[in-house]
Length: 434
Image 1 (tube, rainbow, N blue to C red):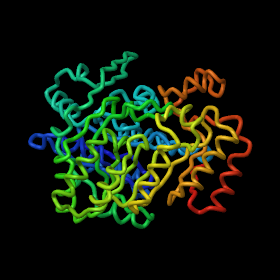
Image 2 (cartoon, rainbow, N blue to C red; image 1 turned 90 degrees about the horizontal axis):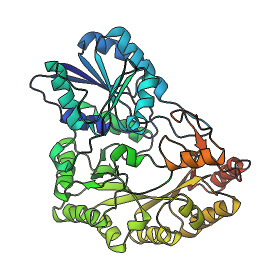
Image 3 (cartoon, rainbow, N blue to C red; image 1 turned 45 degrees about the vertical axis):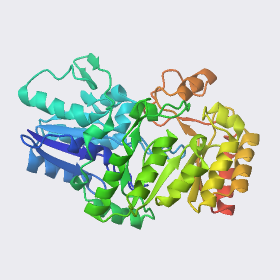
């Protein structure tokens, strides 16, 4: 069977290698299948590129991987699914292939995405195992609608099977990084000022309760860590096979459980692997010993996912940690000379002038190397902030949250843009996502 897998992401800020699709390809049987991929990034005429590929390859099955729904910008929103809808239309007009939708964005709003893109089949959850089984059943003309993770919308009948979250993760193998031009991703990232074009994942799942976050929908709530040896084996292969010395851990919760992160660092140290890496940290699970091991194992930069510098807002956002823990995290990173980035999310429930100034004052106090602030909180289907927004009258009950929808506290909306711009202009460690 001829299978065409398409990376639909065309957003280049930041440049991001299609890791999820590389994992899916690694799980496909090659003996009886002919597999090709199409990367629609970095092209001025993606429509022509797609039409040409469909004509040349003539696939039986097309898999569409969707990374993001939108750019999460309240002031300058970009809705990525309009591109995906166009891609589906082209596929249908130039091919009779079975179209299957998946990816991180699909897990956030599967039925809504099927309806919007006018597709009728998707995989909810992780696709490395199920997509291969789906291909086998399509080839044999066997029933596939009973497979775990299958979502179907056809003839007004909806099938919504429970998702698959693979455990243990070691059994799925490494992502097939040969399928996309990794050197080109590194080149484009470098041109954009990024050093982390190559990504790696040490675990999946997030048990936290942040009111706005879609990670539990994407990766599941149960934390499923890979074995430290397996993670470092992949790091070794990345350096050996591609000559890459800088990677970024894209785990939604890299330093939980803390023992797992420490074990990865120790494994890197014990094996003498010289590599530089970055990650994002939850302040609740940062210790001096962890940061020491991070530094010794090659960590050069880390983001602190604080989202606020006000205990009131941390509580309202259900972050699960305190300002004191943010302070300690930044102090440890500075002590070990690890470049630190803090993230701010202005405008959540209860945000006012007092909480904004508390956040800014905290950044002045702890002095991270960079602060990235987002104005407004993107409201995704199923997140608690959607219920809060409806209850408070910010969002109408029948609003289709697939489209860019934001929560921004009334108490700051009239002045926060001007205030944030002045902040960024006067202090260059502040960057803004408007």
